Image 1 (cartoon, rainbow, N blue to C red):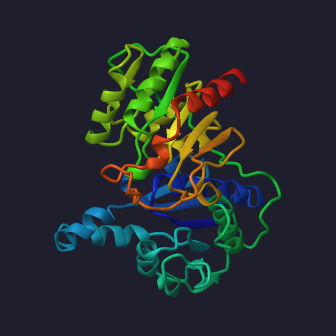
Image 2 (image 1 turned 90 degrees about the horizontal axis):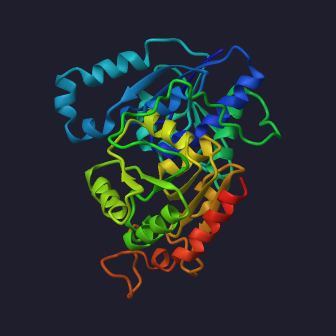
Length: 345
């Protein structure tokens, strides 16, 4: 059986879909998947051994200059790649307006969420075969149910299994000596309200270094790199990593003792790797999109306004939109939880 999955972004959302492929492979031992994904995250589908081919989009740049992309043949090339092969099933596992457009470009019927389950209407109009899924459950379980409905089997009672194979992921060349034990401190996030203050990270780095741990701080862009450098500046045992390919970040994280993370894509990477991790939550709801796995722990602010899903903190005591709830998450509290997790290994 050959299946085409349409799921473009984002990093964490892509990782949420991986257990569904593992489920399907247990039911159909010969199944193969192709996956349509944004170019920036094309490494993620390749982590699953049942993914045969990745078809990439660059919809962010296309949106900025669709006429230029059309003239350069990018859109035509994508359309041809999307329709180059025949599939037994095509399923949109993202179900928003971007993925619905891709579904419409694919010749033939597509499975996707119905109007009662779909987050962004009228995306549901793109699907010949509508699927009803309870939107009030975790994304991993929603993904498992969508693929099960499209392929005609019941979701297994077993725990979600990401099923990845990262043998091809190699450590990067670094300008410092990597020594164990080390921690991955994922300080960055796309929303201001997800960020733990720099001074808190600095205090935690000092505690970790005193306890004998090297600290690695990854980044996704120049601004995050400068933030990582600022945090790392307090200790010779802390290192701001340059922007690295996801495969290399995965290799580094795989070798770490544990992960402490903001609510961002790399926090979900820890779950995929079954790496002990604590993720800090304030503005978002762990019930729907929290890191998912036995080794995953959530530290949630105690404020009544959380989760607010605001990108900037609206509280009057907030300075420049910075999150009051995250600032109130004390360093000693976080370090105690992380230290307990490390001692339990």
